[in-house]
Image (cartoon, rainbow, N blue to C red; front, side, top):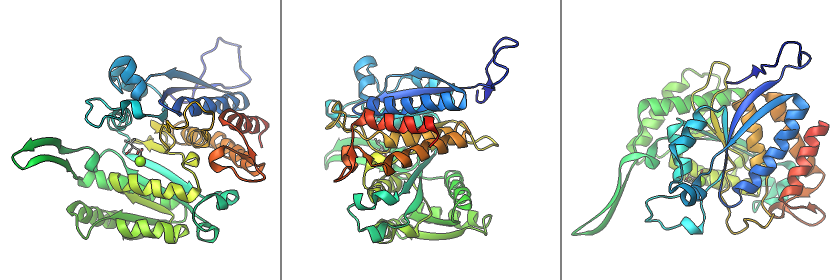
Length: 383
Ligand code: IPM
Ligand code: MG
């Protein structure tokens, strides 16, 4: 599907090769639709400046999907995703659908997409922007130089292992979740870590709980074995509790971290706070890659649907906009275009544009739409 020149009649549009890409939009709930709208504003400028055509299809998912269709994720939506080059995913969830005992939950949408599209590798970059050093609860001197990517395994472990159930017997209510990993699942995610470390500062931290868990021992064993194929990458192992501590104590010591699903969920929320706000943190969830490194992916901000600020024009669209940049790079193979968005975000920040979550004295605190416009205009100007 990707990179096809448009099929115009002979003689037309000879001057410019227009590439067409199919993108599925799933705005979801809360601030999801608000931030998706701003990413589309930015992508529109990318289309104009670089001469691409993005064809969008939109699907209703999450809580909105439950209201409309009775389920958070319809098979039709998964089928549409499979036919697309990438999925731009907003956020799901809200108090309206919060009953933990309900049969259908908004989160089914994101978990189902990950599993059914085979998106096993979740990349969450954490970079502390030099201008935002004061925005975190940590001391600037601790944060200085922080630039890491956390790779979280996304389709295995406790989230999906069977048995997974609740029941009741004479001893009372019971529940079980299963932490299970196969050699193949560990090997493929650890390789994603080594490959990425190789393109960066060549350090990989594999995080496990090998002192207690059998899956942790297997994880460590396989990471070590795979490491023999990457003699140029320094591999270290950390127990997850120590890693949680080191993220706060010395965040700039990390380059690439690779870990299992649940540990990755917890550590990435922690790591996001290094950057001051969840509103700044993009993510990519990737499946198998083509030879050129591209392939289907789902791109979403790591923040949730934030129902407390939904509809108030306060949401920070940068995480969604930066997720769109990751989409251009990792699913569409448009590196220059991705970098143009990232640069535009940096320029807008350096000019003082801030949404309320990252605002402060002397800065231009603006609403969601104004932040999106500020970035879009800077993409257009090629700043
Ligand atoms: C995340 C979220 C999800 C997860 C929820 C919404 C199911 O916390 O993407 O980190 O636990 O994976
Ligand atoms: Mg999470």
